[in-house]
Image (cartoon, rainbow, N blue to C red):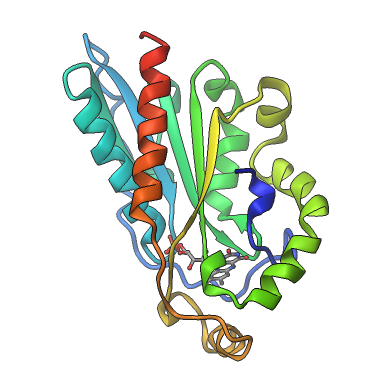
Length: 220
Ligand SMILES: Cc1cc2nc3c(=O)[nH]c(=O)nc-3n(C[C@H](O)[C@H](O)[C@H](O)COP(=O)(O)O)c2cc1C
């Protein structure tokens, strides 16, 4: 799965309709303990909560696989102060108007050097399953142009020079009126899109398993 598989609207468009809910963004007050345990970070940018729920599920799975060897931290991206203290990072973001949320894009660009030496896994949470078929076709016809745009947005340096991320996955999230203003909600309903919970927990489990297997192969 590549980033251009996203169902997208105008790339790079600023979205005046985002109404982020409050998520705990208490800053890390000290770096993670680096004793005998190495540490994996799962971090996310979420406006209405479904990306956060998927990140927490990934972290829970990694804890079951690595409880004896690695400590797994899971927190919103705004709270991360020491990304270079970790040995592997999973970064996820909700998609709004065809792009990762600003905090997530900034994190990858700001920390390119920190992330360079470590395994990086990324995921996006959108709502392709909520859209009617005709809209998916329109979106598909623009994929080629959008691929380049998306590479820039998630950190061109990472994807071009290192082949990072190691793996990227696109998930369906939840579509609810809560995260949209009335105009956006009206447009969404008028085009025949559906409201609902489209999260695919099996796919989340497979993604988590892939990460765990890949980390294990690295024998650290
Ligand atoms: C303002 C707005 C714009 C959105 N734009 C897109 C989009 O371009 N492509 C897409 O697949 N989903 C889009 N979505 C759907 C969200 O990505 C989806 O609901 C996701 O689950 C949100 O994650 P969150 O709950 O972590 O915020 C949009 C949602 C909102 C509220």
